[in-house]
Structures are given as C-alpha cells and as structure tokens.
Amino acid sequence: MDPAVKPRDDRLVKVCPQIDYLEHYSDMAFTNEEQKEVMLKVLYLGPKGSGKTSNLKSLLALAGDTTKQSGASFFSQRKLPFFEFLPLSVGSLKQYKVKLHLFSFSLDSPFESLRKVVFTGVDGFVFVADSRVIAMGDNIENLSSLHSIFKEEGYVVSEVPQIVQFNKRDEKDIAPVNVLSQELNPFRMPEKEAVATLSRGTAETLSLLTKQILNKLADS
Ligand SMILES: Nc1nc2c(ncn2[C@@H]2O[C@H](COP(=O)(O)OP(=O)(O)OP(=O)(O)O)[C@@H](O)[C@H]2O)c(=O)[nH]1
Ligand SMILES: [Mg+2]
Image 1 (spheres, helix red, strand yellow):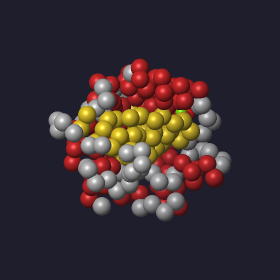
Image 2 (cartoon, rainbow, N blue to C red):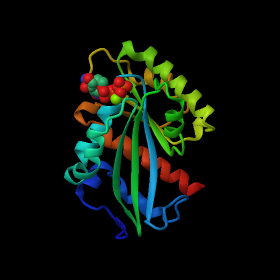
Image 3 (cartoon, protein in one colour):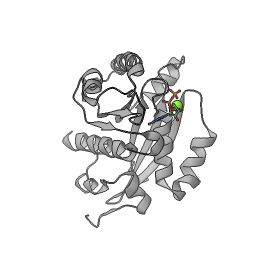
Image 4 (spheres, rainbow, N blue to C red):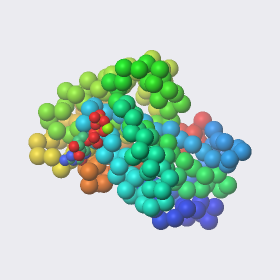
C-alpha cells in the first residue's frame, strides 16, 4: 500500500478492504478544500424488508468502537421513518479524508421533498434484493420504480455506479443467482451475494461500490 494512503485504523480496512486503490485518485472531482474531505453519497435501496437496514447495521458493527462513538449514536438515535443515515470514514487519500454518507431509503416515502433531498447528488447505490422466490415480484417492481425515480431526478441510471446485492442467501427457498441476475441486473453491474444479518458480503458490497464510484470520478 502506498504510504500516502493511511487507513485510520484497522476497522477502516475491515469496512473497505480495498482501500489501497485510493492512491490512484488524487484529483477528485468534488472535494471540500477547506476541510480536506472527499464525500461520497451512497443510497441503499430495495423492496420493503430486503435488508437495507441490516446492511447498515452490519457495516456499523464491522466499523468498531470509534464509529460507535460518533456515527453510531446518530444512526441509532435518529432513526427516521423513511431513511437512515450512517456516516463512515474510510481512510485518507493523500491529504484528504474520504467519507461515505450511507443512506437507506424506502421508496414508499409519501414526501416528495424528502425524496428529492435523498436523491440529490447521489454518487452510487446498492440495490438490496431479497433472494427468496416469493420476493421476486417485489424486487422487480421496486427496481422498476427506482429506475423511474432516478430518471425523474435527472440521472441516466445505467451510468450511476451501482451494485446489485442478492441478500438473504441463507434462506431456504431462494432463487438461483443466474435467475436473479437476469431479472434484476439489466445493466450488467457488479453483483454480490450476502447475508446481511451475519455480515456476509456487506463490506464487500460497499467496497465494490466505492471502487466503482472512484473509477468513474477518475475517468471524468
Ligand atoms: N435470514 C435472513 N434475514 C435477513 C437478512 N437480512 C435481513 N434479514 C431480516 O429481514 C427483515 C427485514 O430486514 P431489514 O434490514 O429491516 O430490511 P429493510 O430493507 O431495512 O426493510 P424496510 O426498512 O422496512 O424497507 C429483518 O427481520 C431482518 O432480520 C438475511 O441476509 N438473512
Ligand atoms: Mg429499513
């Protein structure tokens, strides 16, 4: 790892194990010059009960004590009906701190204004799908809605960095990955199997997405 890239401690590596790729991105498209920070906004989307909150909880648990004293209290005490927020620091890139702002959001929110705020300035998203066969209809419907919302908010959804996560792989009656992939990954984005409640695949999902976001920024 380049000595310029210093994860603040071990927990950061656990959350974002591929942190060393950051060394390639010294000229970020958007940074807070005064505070020397790069912030990436990431949404966790998906049908009701697919495991969005479980993903954030898993990342919080993996992040360890330091985050628990800062972000965690915010996360647990400010649980809002329609979204949750988890800030995570993933290390430093040269003189910049890299921060992820993770939101879980339900498309059911009746508040147009809230949706607009959440969908403004999105750098990437995770579509958390429920792998169970009975959830396939909900997955497809939710994916279609979120594509419409991204379009309404001015994005070309196929150009937004995204990961399709197949969660609940520990459940009994689950669809095979190739079927989920065919139904839920029209843009052939990276996929990750997960069991969010056991913290399987959650850090890897976030790492894959962060990498994709930074690659896109480097190309722009
Ligand atoms: N077996 C299993 N259960 C899971 C997994 N992930 C989440 N769950 C369970 O599924 C239920 C819903 O999980 P949440 O994380 O609350 O789902 P959500 O997407 O945040 O749900 P909403 O906020 O209501 O849209 C909970 O009972 C979780 O414990 C998983 O990987 N395996
Ligand atoms: Mg939730």
